[in-house]
Length: 263
Image 1 (cartoon, rainbow, N blue to C red):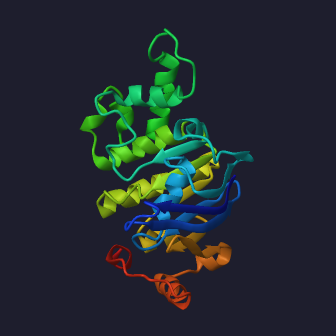
Image 2: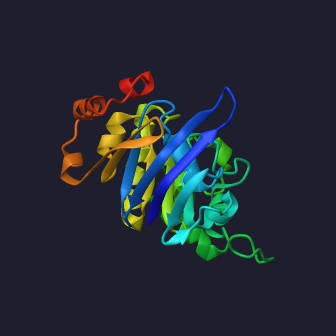
Image 3: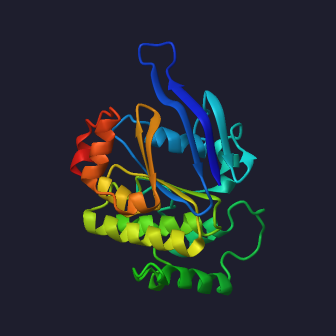
């Protein structure tokens, strides 16, 4: 479903601020894979995700989604393949619009605009059933402005919006980092359920070792713009935080990020 072939990306080339963010990244995600990506600050996690999303062009290499080479496509043309949930709960929804209006926008993404009635009765019922799956009571607040929701409620809603049209690939960019631990756990449980029920392929960047180990069927670790670990199957299911640190150290990784070590 996703194939990265030898991706390189350097920021500010030829200046004193030159930084090679991706250093020959190659990765293949099969359909249904849920891959968590962890690493210290500057390891290349978010750069890799943004390269997939088309936020900026890569210097070299290829990005293939479901057999289509999207390397040269700009972000807005690549969006039809992707669903995305951002770190900031304020991103991904329209705060001044109602919950049902946000869902309607997501449902009609990529469709030709018409002068038909805003939201049909059938759509309202569909949205109500969708919101019930979150167990947050939002099905009874469909006309509430999204800006009045808590951070966790907004992230859960964004997750529904990002997966409403079953994207080829779901990108999760530290989407629980701004939430308190209890809310983050709830959003991650919802993430697991949505991915499982819709048979989605997902790529989740996180700083939290426990979350990286507990979620998904594969775990990759990045360091200095490279993927240095790729653990799947039974090995991942038995993995502990201590195992992960030991493997990282054995490969000469530089785990100097307090955010990762203390998560």
